[in-house]
Amino acid sequence: MKLKSHLLLVALLVWPVLAMAAPAAATKPELLLVYWSSRDCTWCAAWEKPQPGMENSLKNSKEFKKITYRTIKSDRLVDPYVDEDYPPDLKWLKDRVDRGEESPAGRPGWAFYVNKTHIASFYGVKAWDVTNFPAIKKLVAQYSSDDRLITPSSAKSSGPRF
Image 1 (spheres, rainbow, N blue to C red):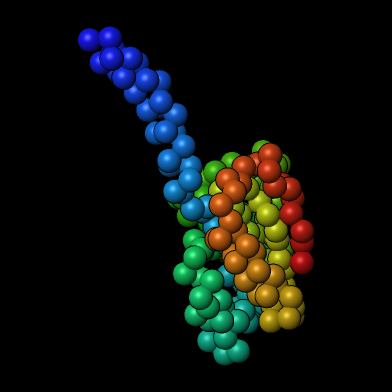
Image 2: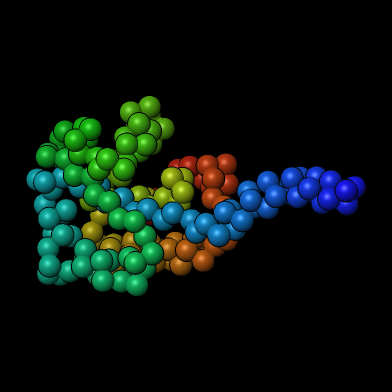
């Protein structure tokens, strides 16, 4: 009877620790790329066009399969983003912008997040093929294979801007 009590006590003490450790090790980081745009933005429209295919180059890349991609698009460049511009799953980002903790990337612009932590921002189409897209690919490769748990305290909140 003592052996059963000891085994039960050990199981009760060890099981919660194992249960908490297993999900952390098995969970892959959530990689999010947010595209900031406006309907009247000439450069945004150029990036989105099938030719020269800058947006298609992203969507057809192997890295695209590893990320969540969301678009935030306002009606006009001169207007601030409003609630309706944000997809429902990005309410947390709208809240951060409203509190002044984040600012939208320029238009067209992209912001890269890992587990909702801002890692980097990119702006403009002139540097897409040479700078922005290669940097995004590098970040996806780095963080999709990274076993570290990315939290706000383990990453720069502002991140590099390209």
